[in-house]
Image (cartoon, rainbow, N blue to C red; front, side, top):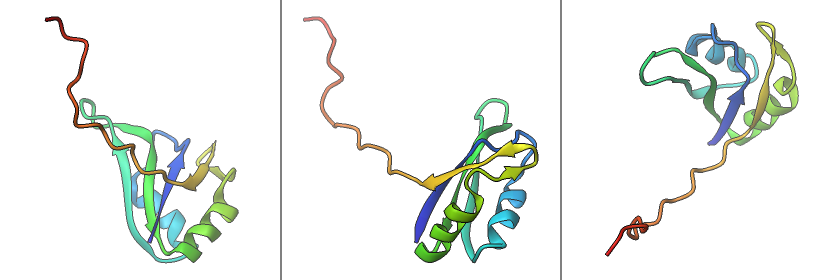
Length: 93
């Protein structure tokens, strides 16, 4: 499975809109529209999981394409860097 970052989504886009857009390319394993914690409104990006082959097709066919008036930015998502488990530092003695 490959996770894709889907950026520059219109604020009005829903998770179903994203899933429908990518299902035209191949089987979508998951689609997750990222929402603001406080307002519950879209933050303008999502993550989609697809097979490696379908993900490559999605990038080549959809990156830069107009979606509801916005040019999509699609690329393979990068894992979050691991946080160190050391102390936060900066404290006084």
